[in-house]
Length: 95
Ligand SMILES: [Zn+2]
Image (cartoon, rainbow, N blue to C red; front, side):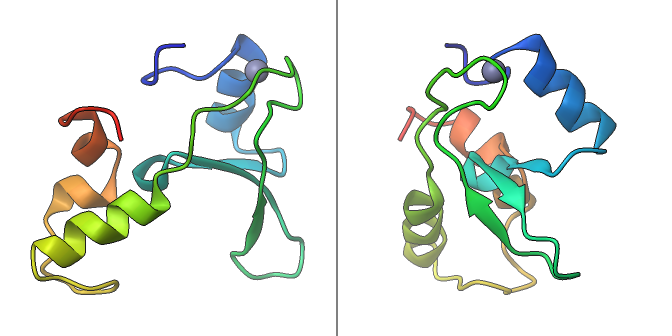
């Protein structure tokens, strides 16, 4: 699977429309189902609900290791912008 695209057309279409409970967090390469409590929490999913394929591995831990190795912590306003999107992991060997 190419990691710069989603697993299938339905996933891509639904994420683009933003009208389903499925979300994608590019910087962590995480897919999830929103918890409908008015907050921002979600439950991580490992398979696509439409095509059933295994989704790419999450890289949340690698993200924290990277920013900590650069001397930053979560919420730091000085975190380089590449770490706010998928740019940081696309620019490196795949974690
Ligand atoms: Zn899919």
